Image 1 (cartoon, rainbow, N blue to C red):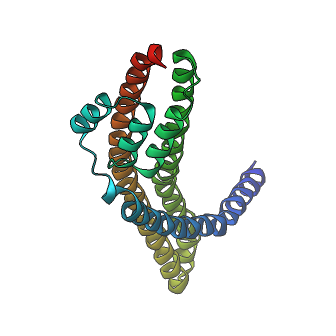
Image 2 (cartoon, rainbow, N blue to C red; image 1 turned 180 degrees about the horizontal axis):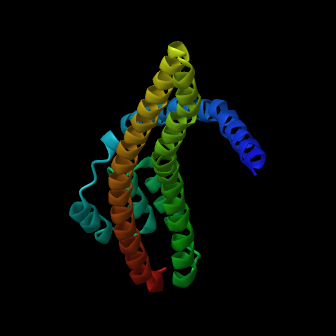
Length: 216
């Protein structure tokens, strides 16, 4: 029984010890990824967010005042909406032959694609915020086993290395999780605002085109 217990402990220690390098590699990959994500967030602000200056009541009134789909397209192009939103709304207006039902179906499809794009972006940082602390904890616990053994044999150097690795992996994991959480929070707030305004404008466009349909 003692032999079995010793063998099982050695196998378990070998398995856990073999995970140390993959855990550290994953943490380093996450660190590179979060730097890239922060860079894309800054790029997103420069290319999109700072140009998002739409005032919804004014845009709604301007759309209601249009008499043709071409005029509505011009209003949308001159608005402070995101470039992608403008493209989608213009696409929606560029098919005068569609019935109201077909137009609504197209609007739902385009809206779903836009929401799905935002959801995918947020899921990446949400996943990183959950996994990074777990990897940091694994990176803390794994080297402590050999460190405790080194303490028993008086090997202070190995103990110091194990403790240093434990602290480094914990700190890195928490830093990655913190930055990922911040990015997710910012993007969720941005994307929620985008979609609220986007949904409202689509409803107005569909309503205006529906009223205009009998005269086409």
